[in-house]
Length: 154
Image 1 (cartoon, helix red, strand yellow):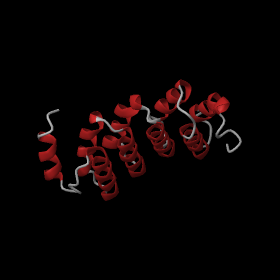
Image 2 (cartoon, rainbow, N blue to C red; image 1 turned 180 degrees about the horizontal axis):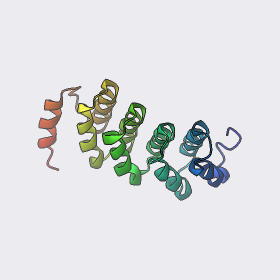
Image 3 (spheres, helix red, strand yellow; image 1 turned 180 degrees about the vertical axis):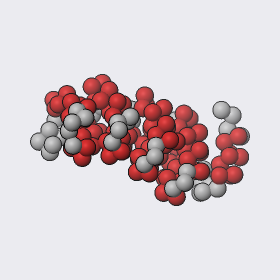
Image 4 (cartoon, rainbow, N blue to C red; image 1 turned 90 degrees about the vertical axis):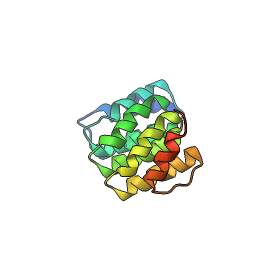
């Protein structure tokens, strides 16, 4: 994997590894990470967007993180879905961070909803993302965030 990482000419090969369900999930996760470390392109965007829905939580987590790292705005809705519904906490945490990197009004509501996540780590990462995007400093106070959100004129 290390031999393939960093060279944009290897994007198709990394994409194929990522998509190969017979490949070890750790290797596939490393392929997603390697794709996220390269300049963004259509081929890697397609591979990573598909991997957001992978059966493996390791692959989902790494694909979500890579999309956030690359700033792939088409991935906002799928990542928001992972933040809301993924059973694996590491995927939800990666989604909160990724949405914070993607920024924009479209990520605010999913991050606000994550303030009620059952995991305190997801909550804190959502707060950090919200603070970075909005400049507001309400911490883990859902009522304050709700009041702010109501007044922002969606």
